[in-house]
Amino acid sequence: MYKLLKYRFKSFILIATVTTISFGIYPSLAVPVYADASCGGSGQSVPTAIDFGCSHTGNPITDLMFAVIRILADGVGIVVIASIVVAGIQYSTSRSDPQAAADAITRIRSSLIALLIYLFGFALLNWLIPGGFFNSS
Image (cartoon, rainbow, N blue to C red):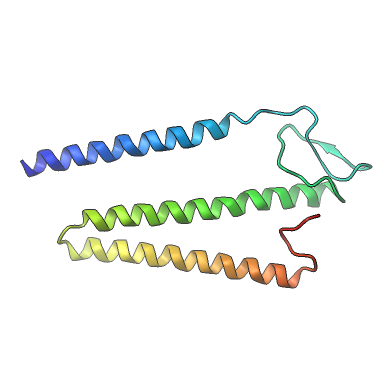
């Protein structure tokens, strides 16, 4: 009986994960391509196939770099949240296994430390670079 419930729970988690990833990733891949997307100022504008969200000011290389870094900064948040969710699932399924619970707690702690390192790095870059690193305008 226990093995059957364990199998059904694993199947449910697998189906829920695949469905969540499918609904989360596929719509984000269907971003329309704009023919007039560009990075850089008016005199030095460089056309791009994808609209990265450039601010259209200054050098096109730095404008594109700021846009890509903003996208990667969003990725850090997504990865940390996903890691904490997985660790929560690990912790809740550990039952009375102290080693599995310790692994889950370690994962949560590591995720929060990674988030703090990112936040301190973000603050340091905004303090060192005049005008802020993530404000390219």
